[in-house]
Image (cartoon, rainbow, N blue to C red):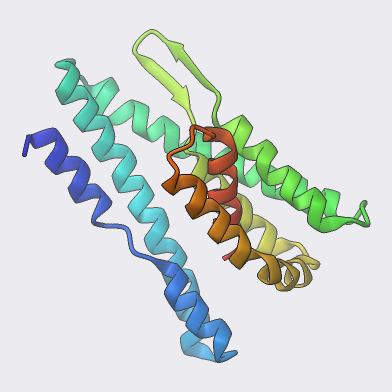
Length: 196
C-alpha cells in the first residue's frame, strides 16, 4: 500500500457512523443529560472526521502529484473547511428566515438542501490556491444552524423521519448501480445527513 493511500485510509478510519446512535435514541425516545451530551458529541465526531479527511486528502494528493507545498498541504484544506462552515452558516440562517414565509416547508427545505449542494460543488483556482467547499460539511453546518435557531425544525424533522428510510433505500440502490448522478446522489446523501 502506498503512503498516500495509507494516509487517505487512515483519515477515513476516523469517521464513525452516527446513524446507529441516533436511531437508538429515537427508538427509545431517550431524554436526559446523557442524551443531551451524546448527540452533540456524535455530530462533532463526524465534523472532526471530515476535517481530518480534508487535510489528509490534500497531503495525499500533493504527494501523488509530487507538488508538496504549504499551499497544497495546509492552505487549500483550511480554505475548504472555513469556507464550507461559512457557507453552511449562511445557508442555515437563510433557510430559517425562509421557513417562516412558506406553507410547504418540507418541499422548500429539500429544494434548499439541493441548492446548497449545488453551490458547494463550485470551485475556483487562483494560482496554486483552490477555493472550494466540502458538500457534506456545508450541509452539516446548514443542519446545525437550522435545527438550533429555527422554532419549526422539530416539526420538519419529525415529518422527515417518515420518508427518510425509503430515501436511504433509493440512495443505496443508485450508489450500488454505480450511476453517475453526482449532484443528485450527493444531494440525497446530504439530505439524509441533515435529517439525521
